[in-house]
Length: 500
Image (cartoon, rainbow, N blue to C red):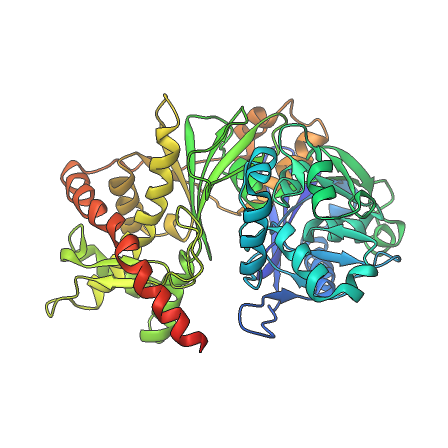
């Protein structure tokens, strides 16, 4: 039997998944690790935790499949985007990685946009937000100059993990486009950006395609698992890009709505264009010469998680969501905005905070629960509507992944609010599936990702919008869109009182 392994280095855990050549999932394993919050707004991780987690996952996979050592042909990777890994002259981490959800760089973002904003948008098609890599670099240079002097290489998380497995330093286009250091169209490090921010090109790795063969598994790792042939290692992709191909988003006719810790609305495009709302993002895709546009709800699944842990810790998600089936569309006038950690798209605002609007004495627990599901979906719809407005063609369907794909009622809510048929995956394994598909295409098991998806990606039946619900949600959506402008001033005042 022939196998590929897809490894996803996520924010809270590392996952590995094994597929055979027919696209059958054979085994999977995962390992959690911690996030370090040393100060308010700081979010860091120890890169060595990723290495330990990868070793644990590999051990599990090889113990589950008797002939994996004989059949393993390729490995590829997916990983959390933007997070900054600084290496010394020996390619060892100088400090904890600064994660994508670290928000210490608000001042640096404002500074970058005021001094270089138009140029940045022209070159990268993205504005400086706290999540991106460039503001983190600017922060380190300003606040830890002695540390910066020791920096020999800059990598992103999955690229550091891949280095540890192969000894080769690279970064592929889909992840590099999220650093704000790369010219999106030319697919090269931008000399203009590097010169302006005084960043040496020598500390950046070479750029490669996602399906490019970048090395083979180290000999000591092969010996550990009794592997007697070279195992080809392919560059991989950013987690959202891998999620997209793992969900079969390989055509401009489909969109992806993902609800994890954050929420993502993503579509494919084959051209570089200036997006209408500069808080949306345009990145290189893992499919060569393609791109993807996306908007991000900063606290999607984490809003529901916060709600359950704060108010109903003894309830499971299933118990809470089951109650929503008896509540009508619109939660009888109760609206929720998922701004509990600020917002990213289409409102880049670190000070905005969440709201329940329209609370009535008749509202019960189920109303609040349903309003959270609806509020998260309204937020994603704002991005969906902006992207739709840039296109002449319509979407055939929206593929749901993450928490929003696991509950029958939430799937119907999304179909109704988006006013578009939705479907989910029969077996969802997230970005790790996309990573495995990259290895499969890199090995020439399939001619392209379209062929690969025929084997790897299988859907459930479509869920269609209910006309009456669509009408109700359209009215509430217009109210929802007003809430940001009505509450941003109040949120700003509250923020500054807290800062005193």
